[in-house]
Amino acid sequence: MQLNDYNFRSKDGVSRQIDHIILRRNGIFVIETKNFSGTIYGNENNSQWTQVLGYGKEKHKFYSPVKQNETHVRKIKEILGKDAPVFSIVVFVNGNIDFLDIENVYDLDGYRDRLLNNYDYYLDDDEIIEYYDILVEHEEDIDKEDHIRDVNKFKKR
Image (cartoon, rainbow, N blue to C red; front, top):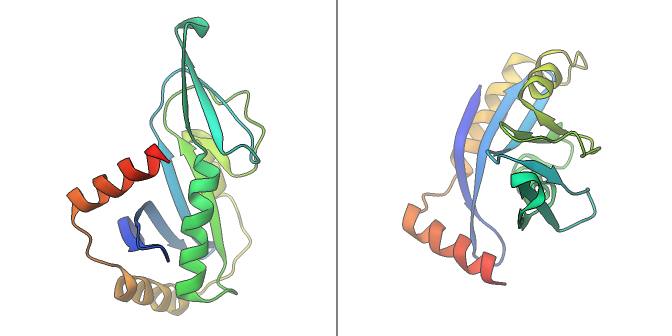
């Protein structure tokens, strides 16, 4: 089962959006996707990562998707309970992530392998449906324009 573009408000009232939540027997996966070209640099402790384009001629900073997804995972665990088997995954659908050595950050092939070939089972079908229903009940209806305004405010901090 899967939820896409899942919306909620953080404790400070800021709207947040989770790209995907996938519920499977091997866990509940909170997925942040990034579609960046170029080479990506960062580590799990940095709050800012760097995208390098044009053989180093152009560099752009962006907020760490690992840190971003930590907020998402905390919210999902708050909703489902701290014992729920919730896992963070960051997926770069483009770009070179060869210089990243961070657990749970993948390209598309690594993501598929992680999702499909992890045989540690935590949930049965009834639990998956129960967690799915709870998540649907707690999703907030947030206007897209409001969310974009919140994202832009966050970027200016």
